[in-house]
Image 1 (cartoon, rainbow, N blue to C red):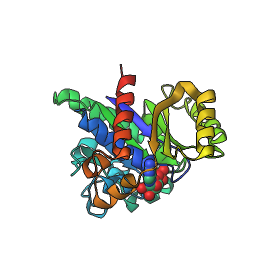
Image 2 (image 1 turned 45 degrees about the horizontal axis):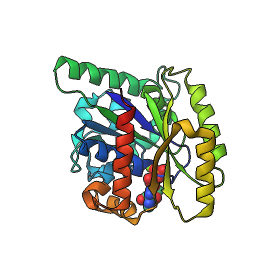
Image 3 (image 1 turned 60 degrees about the vertical axis):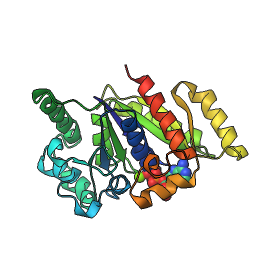
Length: 259
Ligand SMILES: Nc1ncnc2c1ncn2[C@@H]1O[C@H](COP(=O)(O)OP(=O)(O)O)[C@@H](O)[C@H]1O
Ligand SMILES: [Mg+2]
């Protein structure tokens, strides 16, 4: 079981779009996938066709009440397992503040899930994908402590290089809490190849961070923006759209990284 956190402190860079569509594209390649929504906005949850306001159990119950992950998950209409989130998750930080091990709750829950799968001899997940909120709050820290690697969605705009340098430093600092933490890859999102600045920034990212950049660029594609309104990953909504094909390529790159 490989655990991947999709994180970037900036909002609107395509984290949720990447989490949902990477999960769906991995599942389409016959991988067993669990998607965990860690954003109170619940967009990853609704993006897989679940009603975020009608979840019998959510990630909030796991983190606050010790509900087991295997009890909180549902198979989404998108066809893979999801642990949903909604507004109830918003108060987490203040509730857990000062509690010892508050940054390890998800990691502990994840180990319990592994043990459960081993004991029941059920097939383990190949990938757990976690969608983080656009901040370095306690939920994101929980994800970064529980994860094996981070995928950073990044828009090719003026401050991208600085942003990525900052993020690398943050992740470096967090290795104190999770020695395994590393940047699995940076994926260029909302990419417009006709835009000169985007091309220049992309080339600079390649020059400075080439070893961690995915080759796949995710284009700006209207199908990617439309699909969530239908509660579908793009592969179910418009399988042959540019956006869908890009996420399938990204999934192939992610699989190639696995041992
Ligand atoms: N490649 C893309 N092409 C077109 N629209 C996109 C693309 N990626 C994301 N979007 C849209 O941009 C907005 C922000 O994306 P989202 O994935 O929610 O970002 P984040 O989770 O980082 O805040 C959403 O409305 C989403 O549908
Ligand atoms: Mg999001």
